[in-house]
Image 1: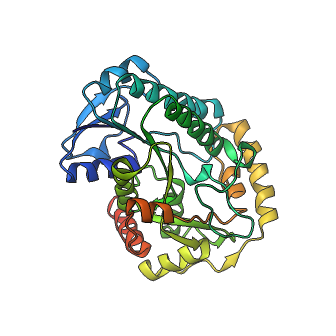
Image 2: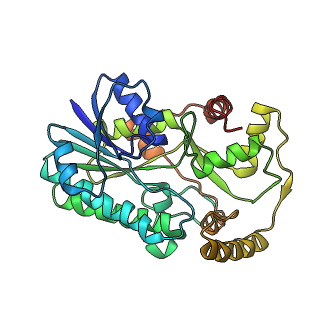
Length: 327
Protein backbone atom coordinates (compact mmCIF):
# COMPACT_ATOMS: atom_id res chain seq x y z
CA UNK A 1 0.00 0.00 0.00
CA UNK A 2 1.58 3.27 -1.16
CA UNK A 3 1.11 6.06 1.39
CA UNK A 4 1.74 9.77 0.73
CA UNK A 5 2.67 12.09 3.61
CA UNK A 6 2.85 15.90 3.54
CA UNK A 7 4.72 17.65 6.34
CA UNK A 8 6.94 14.58 6.72
CA UNK A 9 10.02 16.62 7.61
CA UNK A 10 8.29 18.08 10.68
CA UNK A 11 7.82 16.82 14.22
CA UNK A 12 4.54 14.91 13.89
CA UNK A 13 4.96 14.07 10.20
CA UNK A 14 8.35 12.39 10.62
CA UNK A 15 7.01 10.36 13.53
CA UNK A 16 4.08 9.21 11.37
CA UNK A 17 6.54 8.15 8.66
CA UNK A 18 8.51 6.07 11.18
CA UNK A 19 5.34 4.34 12.39
CA UNK A 20 4.22 3.64 8.82
CA UNK A 21 7.60 2.09 8.01
CA UNK A 22 7.33 -0.10 11.11
CA UNK A 23 4.06 -1.38 9.64
CA UNK A 24 5.80 -2.23 6.35
CA UNK A 25 4.23 0.61 4.34
CA UNK A 26 5.67 1.94 1.10
CA UNK A 27 5.97 5.68 1.85
CA UNK A 28 6.29 8.67 -0.46
CA UNK A 29 6.82 12.06 1.21
CA UNK A 30 6.36 15.58 -0.08
CA UNK A 31 9.32 17.90 0.55
CA UNK A 32 10.14 21.33 -0.79
CA UNK A 33 13.59 21.76 -2.36
CA UNK A 34 14.57 23.93 0.62
CA UNK A 35 13.29 21.52 3.29
CA UNK A 36 15.55 20.26 6.07
CA UNK A 37 15.54 16.47 5.66
CA UNK A 38 17.28 15.72 8.98
CA UNK A 39 14.15 14.07 10.45
CA UNK A 40 14.07 11.62 7.52
CA UNK A 41 17.75 10.65 7.68
CA UNK A 42 18.19 6.91 7.31
CA UNK A 43 14.52 6.27 6.53
CA UNK A 44 13.57 4.23 3.46
CA UNK A 45 11.18 6.69 1.82
CA UNK A 46 10.63 8.10 -1.66
CA UNK A 47 10.98 11.88 -1.66
CA UNK A 48 8.68 13.81 -3.99
CA UNK A 49 9.90 17.35 -4.45
CA UNK A 50 7.13 19.90 -4.53
CA UNK A 51 4.88 22.22 -2.55
CA UNK A 52 1.38 21.87 -1.13
CA UNK A 53 0.30 24.89 -3.17
CA UNK A 54 1.30 23.28 -6.50
CA UNK A 55 -1.82 21.48 -7.68
CA UNK A 56 -0.33 19.83 -10.77
CA UNK A 57 2.67 18.54 -8.85
CA UNK A 58 0.45 17.20 -6.10
CA UNK A 59 -1.74 15.32 -8.57
CA UNK A 60 1.35 13.69 -10.11
CA UNK A 61 2.81 12.90 -6.70
CA UNK A 62 -0.37 11.20 -5.54
CA UNK A 63 -0.63 8.94 -8.59
CA UNK A 64 -0.35 5.32 -7.55
CA UNK A 65 -0.99 6.13 -3.88
CA UNK A 66 -3.82 4.64 -1.83
CA UNK A 67 -3.68 6.75 1.34
CA UNK A 68 -2.81 10.36 2.14
CA UNK A 69 -1.76 11.93 5.42
CA UNK A 70 -1.97 15.71 5.11
CA UNK A 71 0.12 16.90 8.04
CA UNK A 72 1.88 19.95 6.58
CA UNK A 73 1.08 23.27 8.24
CA UNK A 74 2.65 26.59 9.12
CA UNK A 75 2.78 26.36 12.92
CA UNK A 76 4.00 29.58 14.49
CA UNK A 77 2.61 31.75 17.27
CA UNK A 78 3.71 34.90 15.42
CA UNK A 79 4.15 35.98 11.83
CA UNK A 80 4.66 39.44 10.40
CA UNK A 81 2.54 38.49 7.40
CA UNK A 82 -0.53 36.45 8.47
CA UNK A 83 -1.59 36.05 4.82
CA UNK A 84 1.32 33.64 4.31
CA UNK A 85 -0.04 31.43 7.08
CA UNK A 86 -3.57 31.49 5.64
CA UNK A 87 -2.19 30.67 2.19
CA UNK A 88 -0.35 27.61 3.52
CA UNK A 89 -2.85 26.31 6.06
CA UNK A 90 -6.10 27.03 4.21
CA UNK A 91 -5.09 27.31 0.53
CA UNK A 92 -2.60 24.46 0.84
CA UNK A 93 -5.20 22.19 2.43
CA UNK A 94 -7.66 22.88 -0.38
CA UNK A 95 -5.00 22.16 -3.02
CA UNK A 96 -3.91 18.90 -1.38
CA UNK A 97 -7.44 17.60 -0.86
CA UNK A 98 -8.49 18.58 -4.39
CA UNK A 99 -5.59 16.48 -5.71
CA UNK A 100 -6.60 13.63 -3.41
CA UNK A 101 -10.19 13.73 -4.68
CA UNK A 102 -9.02 13.62 -8.30
CA UNK A 103 -6.83 10.59 -7.54
CA UNK A 104 -9.69 8.66 -5.86
CA UNK A 105 -7.73 7.72 -2.76
CA UNK A 106 -9.16 5.08 -0.45
CA UNK A 107 -8.56 7.11 2.73
CA UNK A 108 -7.28 10.55 3.75
CA UNK A 109 -6.25 11.63 7.26
CA UNK A 110 -6.20 15.39 7.80
CA UNK A 111 -4.16 16.73 10.72
CA UNK A 112 -5.98 19.61 12.36
CA UNK A 113 -5.33 20.80 15.95
CA UNK A 114 -7.06 20.96 19.32
CA UNK A 115 -6.63 24.71 18.82
CA UNK A 116 -9.66 24.59 16.51
CA UNK A 117 -11.87 23.09 19.21
CA UNK A 118 -13.95 24.72 21.91
CA UNK A 119 -13.05 24.85 25.58
CA UNK A 120 -15.25 25.08 28.64
CA UNK A 121 -15.06 28.14 30.86
CA UNK A 122 -14.83 26.10 34.06
CA UNK A 123 -11.65 24.35 32.92
CA UNK A 124 -13.30 21.00 32.28
CA UNK A 125 -11.92 19.13 29.25
CA UNK A 126 -13.37 20.05 25.87
CA UNK A 127 -14.42 17.42 23.35
CA UNK A 128 -14.75 17.13 19.59
CA UNK A 129 -18.33 18.42 19.96
CA UNK A 130 -17.78 21.39 22.29
CA UNK A 131 -19.32 24.46 20.62
CA UNK A 132 -16.84 26.84 19.02
CA UNK A 133 -16.71 29.59 16.39
CA UNK A 134 -14.08 31.52 14.46
CA UNK A 135 -14.38 34.40 16.94
CA UNK A 136 -13.04 32.07 19.66
CA UNK A 137 -9.76 31.60 17.79
CA UNK A 138 -6.72 33.57 19.04
CA UNK A 139 -4.13 34.52 16.44
CA UNK A 140 -3.66 33.65 12.76
CA UNK A 141 -2.48 30.07 13.40
CA UNK A 142 -5.63 28.98 15.20
CA UNK A 143 -7.87 30.96 12.84
CA UNK A 144 -6.23 29.50 9.75
CA UNK A 145 -6.43 25.95 11.09
CA UNK A 146 -10.08 26.46 12.03
CA UNK A 147 -10.88 27.61 8.48
CA UNK A 148 -8.82 24.76 7.00
CA UNK A 149 -10.81 22.25 9.04
CA UNK A 150 -14.04 23.69 7.63
CA UNK A 151 -12.62 23.25 4.11
CA UNK A 152 -11.73 19.64 4.91
CA UNK A 153 -15.34 19.01 5.95
CA UNK A 154 -16.52 20.31 2.58
CA UNK A 155 -14.45 17.63 0.87
CA UNK A 156 -16.15 14.95 2.96
CA UNK A 157 -19.46 16.24 1.60
CA UNK A 158 -17.99 15.86 -1.91
CA UNK A 159 -17.24 12.20 -1.28
CA UNK A 160 -13.63 12.22 -0.08
CA UNK A 161 -13.17 9.48 2.58
CA UNK A 162 -11.46 11.84 5.02
CA UNK A 163 -10.95 11.51 8.77
CA UNK A 164 -9.95 14.53 10.88
CA UNK A 165 -7.55 14.20 13.80
CA UNK A 166 -6.94 16.96 16.35
CA UNK A 167 -3.58 16.42 18.06
CA UNK A 168 -3.06 18.12 21.41
CA UNK A 169 0.55 18.86 22.40
CA UNK A 170 2.98 16.15 21.30
CA UNK A 171 6.32 15.82 23.08
CA UNK A 172 9.28 13.56 22.42
CA UNK A 173 12.29 13.20 20.14
CA UNK A 174 12.55 14.89 16.75
CA UNK A 175 11.14 18.33 17.62
CA UNK A 176 13.59 19.85 15.19
CA UNK A 177 12.15 23.36 14.84
CA UNK A 178 11.30 23.26 17.83
CA UNK A 179 7.54 23.73 18.24
CA UNK A 180 6.34 26.39 20.71
CA UNK A 181 5.98 23.70 23.39
CA UNK A 182 9.40 22.31 22.55
CA UNK A 183 10.80 25.82 22.94
CA UNK A 184 9.32 25.99 26.45
CA UNK A 185 11.21 22.79 27.31
CA UNK A 186 14.43 24.10 25.74
CA UNK A 187 14.13 27.42 27.61
CA UNK A 188 13.62 25.48 30.84
CA UNK A 189 16.75 23.41 30.14
CA UNK A 190 18.65 26.66 29.53
CA UNK A 191 17.30 28.05 32.83
CA UNK A 192 15.51 30.83 30.96
CA UNK A 193 12.12 30.18 32.53
CA UNK A 194 12.04 32.26 35.76
CA UNK A 195 8.24 32.40 36.09
CA UNK A 196 5.03 30.94 34.69
CA UNK A 197 1.39 31.72 33.95
CA UNK A 198 -1.53 29.86 35.47
CA UNK A 199 -2.53 27.83 32.43
CA UNK A 200 -2.62 24.22 31.33
CA UNK A 201 -2.29 21.97 28.31
CA UNK A 202 -2.83 18.41 27.15
CA UNK A 203 0.28 16.33 26.45
CA UNK A 204 0.80 13.17 24.40
CA UNK A 205 3.90 11.26 23.32
CA UNK A 206 4.65 12.14 19.70
CA UNK A 207 4.98 8.44 18.84
CA UNK A 208 1.47 7.77 20.20
CA UNK A 209 0.13 10.81 18.39
CA UNK A 210 1.59 9.34 15.18
CA UNK A 211 0.08 5.94 15.92
CA UNK A 212 -3.25 7.68 16.49
CA UNK A 213 -3.11 8.98 12.91
CA UNK A 214 -2.69 5.43 11.59
CA UNK A 215 -5.49 4.14 13.81
CA UNK A 216 -7.71 6.93 12.47
CA UNK A 217 -6.95 5.77 8.94
CA UNK A 218 -7.76 2.17 9.81
CA UNK A 219 -10.70 2.56 12.18
CA UNK A 220 -11.96 6.12 11.94
CA UNK A 221 -15.25 7.11 10.34
CA UNK A 222 -15.08 9.59 7.41
CA UNK A 223 -16.13 13.05 8.53
CA UNK A 224 -15.59 12.24 12.20
CA UNK A 225 -13.06 14.08 14.40
CA UNK A 226 -10.74 12.48 16.95
CA UNK A 227 -8.73 14.25 19.65
CA UNK A 228 -5.26 12.70 19.88
CA UNK A 229 -4.26 13.59 23.43
CA UNK A 230 -3.47 12.06 26.77
CA UNK A 231 -2.76 13.90 30.04
CA UNK A 232 -4.14 17.28 31.08
CA UNK A 233 -1.49 19.07 33.10
CA UNK A 234 -0.93 22.61 34.36
CA UNK A 235 2.10 24.52 33.16
CA UNK A 236 3.33 24.53 36.75
CA UNK A 237 2.91 20.74 36.82
CA UNK A 238 4.89 20.42 33.59
CA UNK A 239 7.80 22.34 35.11
CA UNK A 240 7.70 20.13 38.21
CA UNK A 241 7.94 17.05 35.97
CA UNK A 242 10.91 18.59 34.16
CA UNK A 243 12.51 19.33 37.53
CA UNK A 244 12.18 15.66 38.51
CA UNK A 245 13.73 14.60 35.20
CA UNK A 246 16.60 17.10 35.08
CA UNK A 247 17.21 18.36 38.61
CA UNK A 248 16.81 21.93 37.33
CA UNK A 249 14.62 23.92 39.77
CA UNK A 250 11.13 24.66 38.51
CA UNK A 251 10.07 28.34 38.49
CA UNK A 252 8.21 29.30 41.66
CA UNK A 253 6.87 32.72 40.63
CA UNK A 254 3.37 32.79 39.13
CA UNK A 255 2.80 35.87 37.01
CA UNK A 256 -0.53 37.75 36.99
CA UNK A 257 -2.20 37.51 33.60
CA UNK A 258 -3.13 41.16 32.91
CA UNK A 259 0.40 42.68 32.97
CA UNK A 260 1.74 39.86 30.81
CA UNK A 261 -1.05 40.44 28.28
CA UNK A 262 -0.26 44.17 28.20
CA UNK A 263 3.44 43.42 27.68
CA UNK A 264 2.54 41.02 24.85
CA UNK A 265 0.49 43.71 23.09
CA UNK A 266 3.41 46.14 23.33
CA UNK A 267 5.84 43.45 22.15
CA UNK A 268 3.54 42.67 19.22
CA UNK A 269 3.53 46.29 18.09
CA UNK A 270 7.30 46.53 18.31
CA UNK A 271 7.71 43.30 16.33
CA UNK A 272 5.44 44.51 13.54
CA UNK A 273 7.67 47.56 13.18
CA UNK A 274 10.98 45.69 13.26
CA UNK A 275 10.04 42.29 11.81
CA UNK A 276 11.75 40.57 14.73
CA UNK A 277 9.95 37.72 16.49
CA UNK A 278 8.43 38.90 19.78
CA UNK A 279 9.84 37.67 23.07
CA UNK A 280 6.25 37.32 24.30
CA UNK A 281 3.96 36.13 21.46
CA UNK A 282 0.52 37.71 21.86
CA UNK A 283 -1.30 34.63 20.53
CA UNK A 284 0.49 32.44 23.07
CA UNK A 285 -0.56 34.70 25.97
CA UNK A 286 -4.14 34.83 24.67
CA UNK A 287 -4.23 31.03 24.51
CA UNK A 288 -2.90 30.87 28.06
CA UNK A 289 -6.02 32.66 29.30
CA UNK A 290 -7.70 29.25 29.29
CA UNK A 291 -6.59 25.83 30.41
CA UNK A 292 -6.35 23.91 27.13
CA UNK A 293 -7.67 20.68 28.58
CA UNK A 294 -9.27 18.06 26.32
CA UNK A 295 -10.93 14.66 26.56
CA UNK A 296 -9.45 12.11 24.14
CA UNK A 297 -11.93 9.40 25.18
CA UNK A 298 -13.41 9.05 21.68
CA UNK A 299 -10.00 8.22 20.17
CA UNK A 300 -9.16 5.86 23.04
CA UNK A 301 -12.45 3.94 22.83
CA UNK A 302 -13.10 3.98 19.07
CA UNK A 303 -9.53 3.84 17.75
CA UNK A 304 -7.53 2.28 20.58
CA UNK A 305 -5.26 5.34 21.00
CA UNK A 306 -2.37 4.33 23.32
CA UNK A 307 -1.93 6.27 26.57
CA UNK A 308 1.49 5.78 28.18
CA UNK A 309 2.74 8.07 30.99
CA UNK A 310 3.67 11.46 29.51
CA UNK A 311 6.68 11.62 31.87
CA UNK A 312 8.33 8.97 29.68
CA UNK A 313 7.81 11.14 26.59
CA UNK A 314 9.28 14.14 28.42
CA UNK A 315 12.36 12.09 29.31
CA UNK A 316 12.84 11.22 25.63
CA UNK A 317 12.32 14.87 24.65
CA UNK A 318 14.89 16.13 27.17
CA UNK A 319 17.44 13.51 26.08
CA UNK A 320 16.91 14.42 22.41
CA UNK A 321 17.30 18.16 23.01
CA UNK A 322 20.49 17.61 24.98
CA UNK A 323 21.92 15.12 22.48
CA UNK A 324 21.22 17.42 19.53
CA UNK A 325 22.71 20.53 21.09
CA UNK A 326 19.57 22.52 21.83
CA UNK A 327 20.59 22.92 25.46
